[in-house]
Image (cartoon, rainbow over all chains, first blue to last red):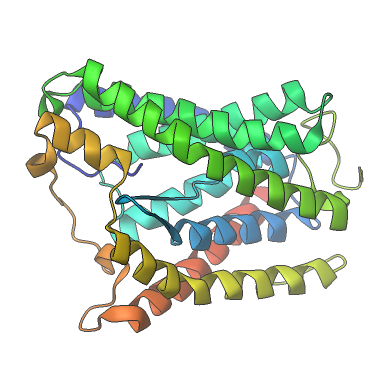
Length: 218
Length: 99
């Protein structure tokens, strides 16, 4: 899912940067009121855990592999603002320190993995959790990675390097990640269920209001 | 990292991070064995974009490997460094925003 440099047209890369910076700016402003207490270490642990989990490439017989992305998980556990911050740390360090994803393309990678993946995952979870909470976490993990893949597919297909073949890039990205996303959904649901059962007070994103005071348990 | 509240969850969480880091070289080996290809790479191949990929800023630990070191140890150290760095950056950012 990490776009290297050279793949995106400058216009597309710029639009991705605009979207990413705008959304991260909103997240930073909203996060100011949400941090403190257990929440700052939790932000760090979730970000670090997602970095480590992204290094685990699942070998899938047939020559495909992918790794957990984790934006939906961050959004559900931390709420959208802190979730966006956690993923921004992960994706930026991957690009700057490990060359995973380009520098000009960093806006696109942030937009897909730190914004869309988090916000869509959180939104899906909130919409469906009344029906079944663990099921909602699965749907969030699966749906969010698929929508992120759509964003990347549109960006690639709108670029000259991909011969503007949206009809090729979008189906490959969306179809591929819709299948791989089943694993993303299963991990999201499994880890969420474990944490929500063992440590319910750590689940910030479950709260009714994004601006809960740090003392409010669930 | 200073912890204000109940830190029992934190000990478990750090242990969890260590387990993930130790697993990194194992998964790396297994993914190599089946051939690593993401949908993005398939899309690049299908449209002839593969060769357009460039690197405009060489990263210190490009490809999650340490300079002059290869194999599983390199992956393990990359995972450890990256995980610790992410933890530090995220907590540092959080602490700054708290004020």
